[in-house]
Length: 287
Length: 251
Image 1 (tube, each protein chain N blue to C red):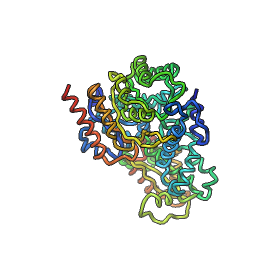
Image 2: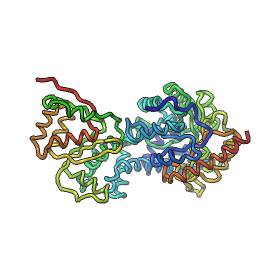
Image 3: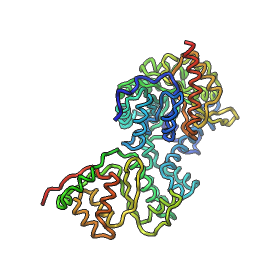
Image 4: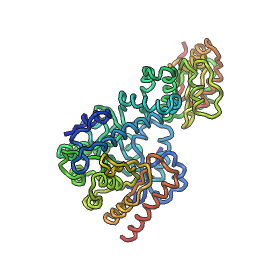
């Protein structure tokens, strides 16, 4: 059983890592600057076995963030009640420091397509997303964080800017926001907009967590740069620069390194966390 | 307006034109940008099948597996976001997939791999203390009905599936036999452990799982080939597969 006296009230303003089972030993023996971990909710919905045992062990040592990838909050249809029940069960026994999900959809007609699919930003979609978030927060009995997406295209029917859309959601539902700095860079590059303007407009007061990750580089039919959010490489320097900008503007925040494909040996991931720690520590000393 | 039904229909069919309401910067058509979503979905679902059915993949080769997995996910997209359990009907799909007919045991290998996965994620349970069972007088012992750990799985095949599976998962596996094999999977701690059962052992375990008493199941086992009660009972106890005892009343 999890020792509930050792659960954590909030994510610390330190680096965290997306947990991969192959890093279990390395993380416990040599965490470096890592103060918390994040797990994908859907990987811990089995009944038992090694995944849950590892998670119970880690939860005694680190604050845990549960990050859902399959709730389909932006879906046109209702939320899947079975999936919501599974989330409630996981969040119930683990009592994580944070729960977050994406501004995206992935389920349609009870089928799940395992990607974070985009939605237009309209009054109609805003209303729908808000009602889904209200439902999630009611069922889980806690605040959730909503993450900004990586965009590869835009919808002709979009009526408002993404930052405005997210700010309205946070205001109406009381949810917090998860600011993925790599997604900001990917989207701004793909849409040929300015990432600094996006960040300066972002309601940093609502941000409970930051994400940093790597992306792939491609180009579209016209030869324009097309970045793809892959979580399969090191964080690039321009994203570190944006992160630095966010920390300067908003102060230290829990900061996650995501590396989900082509997962490197533990020391490589730890070094990425240590790089975030340098920026966080510098800012903490300035305050 | 591009609704989600339209978006998905386009995503599932790589020949479909991109809806005109999806745009690149400057209002150009989205074009290749839409392929990012097509690719993400296809690659991630095929990868989920690759990691769940590594021996099936090895048997048919990577290119064939990729094509087969592409047909499968389009016909059987996941019914839930819990991809650790995706592929529950992959074996049934393979039974009816003519291009794979030249590998007649392929579907049963998929059944075995899925059973290993179910066992891996099954609930943790506390096994009974073997001493408790051994202390019982023989007559009382034979009236015991066992409760089994949910991690236990049994797969019967017309093919030597354990031998084929082992030859494709370990470097120093002995030569594969030619006989039909029934595989029992237990999970002592976290790692599923498959073994081959004799005909007598398979009939015995099957009867026990079905709720027969130890005495009745042993009789069924003994009516078939190669049955030694102490051996199979010792294996079940050592593997922590028995989690409860219930005594059938005396007749």
